[in-house]
Structure formats: C-alpha cells, structure tokens
Length: 439
Image (cartoon, rainbow, N blue to C red; front, side):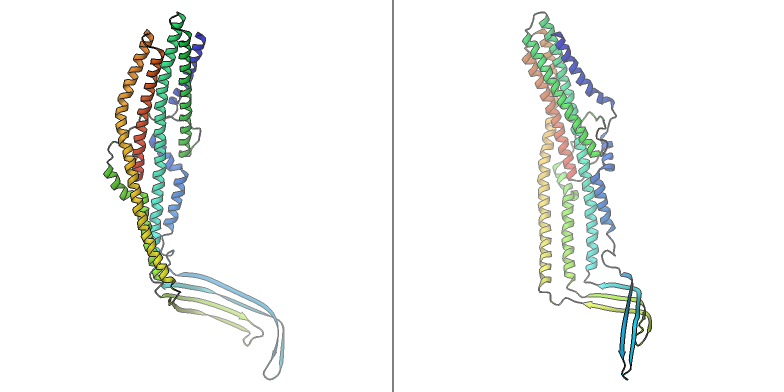
C-alpha cells in the first residue's frame, strides 16, 4: 500500500514539474506577440499588397485624362507577275516583281471630353484606394484581436493549471494521511483506495489541461507565423479595462468601424457609377495626331518608288442619339444601386449596434463576476485548507474534503472564466471600434 501511495505522489510531482519547467523558458509579452504578428502574418502582408495596388492605381493616366502615344511600324512584301496592256495597245510583261512597303511613325490619341467621365473615374480610383487602406486596417485589427484573445486564453488556462496543481497537492496530502491512518488501523482500506483514485483523477485532469495549454500555444505560434514548437511563457494576470461606456463605444463605432466606413465608401462608389453612366449622354470628343514616314517600291506601278513623310491630325466627335432606351435603363439601375448601398449601410449600422450591445452586456456582467469570483475564490481556498486540517484530525469524511476541493476548483474556474469573458468582450468592442491598443 505504501508503495502505491509513493507511486501516486511521484506521478503527481512529475506532472507538476513538467508544467513548472515552462517557467524557465523565455517569456513572451503581449506586445512582443503583437509585434511578431504584424511583421509575419500572411493576411496582413496580403492586405498590404492589395492596398499598395489600389494606391498605385490612383493616377490621372489610369482615369483616362492623359493622351496615349504609340509607335507603330508596318511592313508589307509581295512578289507578283504582272501583264499590263496600255492604251496604245502595247503589252508589258513584268515577271516576279518584288513590291515592298514600309510605314512607321508616332501616333497620339487624346480624349478631350467624355462627359466628365474621366473625372468620375479618378474619384472612383481614390475611393477604391480608401477602401484598400480600410481593408488593411481592418485586417490588422482582426489579427491583433486574434493574438490578444489567444494570449489571454493562455493566461486563463495557466491559472486553471495552477488551481489543478493546488487540488492535486491536496489529494496527495490526503492520500498520505489516509495511508498513515490505515497503517495504524484508524481507517479502512476503502478510504485509502478512494484517496488514491481521487489523486489519479486530479492528475488526469491536470494532464488534460496541460495538453490543452500546449495546443493553444501552438495556435498562437501559428498566428505569429513562427516555429510551431517554439516554447514560451505568458504573463500571469488578466487586466480588464473597466472604463468602457456603451454610448462612447457606439459613437466611436459610427466614426471608425471598418464595416460602416466601407458602407459609406460603397455608397460614394455607387454615386460615382451614376456619374459615369450619365457621362455617355454627352458628346465624346477626341484628338488624333501623328507623324508618319512611308517608303514603297512597286515596279509595276506608275511611280516605281515613293517616299512620303509628315504630320496628320484631326478631331473625332460622337454622341449617342438612340440606343434602344439602354441609357435610361443604366441610369435607373445606377440610382437603385445608390439606394441599395444606403440601405445596406443602415443595416450594417444597426447590426453593429446590436453586436456592441450584446458584447457590452457580457463585458459588464464579466466585471461583476470578477468581483464576486475573487471573494468566492479566496473563501473556497480557506475552506479547502481548513477541510484538509480537519481531515487530518479526523473531524470530517473523505467526501467532505473532496467536496471542498471541487468547490475550490469551481470557484477558481469561474473567476478565471469571468476574467477571460470580460477581456474577450473588451477586445471585441475595441476591435469593432478599430481602437485596439497594446500598452
């Protein structure tokens, strides 16, 4: 029996020691984790590239305001056998005559007026650039939120591991006391076996929690895009910002929420699209010009060799007179798209306000539970210590001390969960308002 007790105690110490070793690895602060994510995360890099593409597109040339200049060259060759009958009746036969032609030059095409569509195009490019920048900020906030919540999840699990270690320590002491009592005939073998079973169960719970803790570490390493097996330790406390006010959060969301701002940009894009459609009602005027050099040889022609060079220029103008009422249809659809953009924006605002309200309820209730949980945790710990001492004196049964262990573990779990719940709600509210700040 004593050998079995010794094995159980050693097993508990082994798992406690395996977790304690994490205290010797380098500590990863929250700021360091966020900085690594900002440097390495693939989604952020993709969003940066997309934003850079949209920024590069904002040029007056891409909007169609500048002329297009091209260099052109055309060559033609042929070998012909020609029979010519002149007006005086004489016949001229030319066999295998080689004809060549070469034309090259520079041409310019410039749209001078297109119903102001080019200005609408430029405004569209600027709005798309804003949308790209907004998408980048939204991606950064999303990645940072993921890192922060995962980091605090690790802290929460670390607290749970410490609580399980405390329960296991109590079980080991209880098993030792029961074994000592059994050796002098004070308790039955059943009580000793029950104590050993409880120690085994507590050890298993600790093993499972440590496994979950390590899995969450892997998840954080994935977010940071670094070595998956890299080991690290996290901070010990979860500090919740208690200064959030519902009205302030809603107001800030109206001004900074990426989805709301994107909705506003999409409405402006719909308005720009209407201007682009309306532009086709007006004349389209373009300037064409160029300088051309032409060389040709035609042995069978009136002029056997011909060279020419010089400028050409002109204006082209066109106007849509009737297109089967398609112009009216496109304008009507463009106006409906503006209306849809406005409706979607209002719906987004309402949905976000509802989300904020729900998370704010979780946030405030979490703060209340933290205060209550702190008191319960301290009382449960005192009760557990007192129960162990009373068990040593033989004043309570094993079931009563086991109940004290469960009460302590439940109080610790509720306190930790309240902290994490409130912190998660806080981070989500700040993500919604695009205001996550790591201090």
